Length: 283
Ligand code: GLU
Image 1 (cartoon, helix red, strand yellow):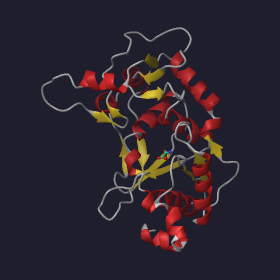
Image 2: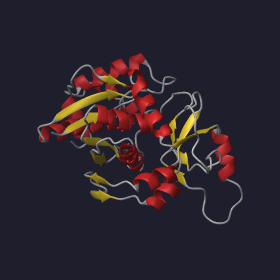
Image 3: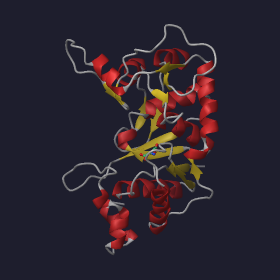
């Protein structure tokens, strides 16, 4: 049974890109005779707002979408994230990191021959400043960022492999150990201010919801290797992936949260119908 989901963050209005993502997820579930789920990704307490969450439900209903209740909200899920983090900690795969963003920038911008410092899915690839030579022991520390020791994780599970069904990279994806080490590196799995991260939460929750086909924008394609590796480390089932094209504005720039001019709510107020929106985004 195919289970898809739409997983917005309530940090701004949904725009045409979100409409495409949500409708595609529902269409793919429907075509396969499966189920479409909604999940609210509100781990960023500093930016999430109840009125944006209310507007998500309202906009999606207006678009004609429906989903089973109750909706999973990541702010209710810290115990599940803690359990996953403890498991990785016990396996010696995490270490505490106290580097600020500017420390990392300074460490990687030291004068060097050749290419500019590598960027991964989360920005600059971490240079390993806090990485210990042997895995830390004792209780898992709180109130500090925790990073994945990528080299250890790869030594344990090997590089990730996943099935991609989206238009740009359809086929079997095998990022390889070198790519994981140099272009992704030791990503943060628990942010100090959140006690979790996008990568960890999305993996734990897709498994908890029984998602079998992850549909999302092509901007998250690079992060998928991290997610598939985490699934292997946590013994979670591996879904299939469909990364879809991004909706762009007239100038060809992809839409971001700040592009409020493309908010679904504004099209509604302007008298457009859900069918008009489907046409505008090519569905
Ligand atoms: N919450 C993420 C976002 O708003 C999407 C996560 C995902 O689909 O994996 O961009």
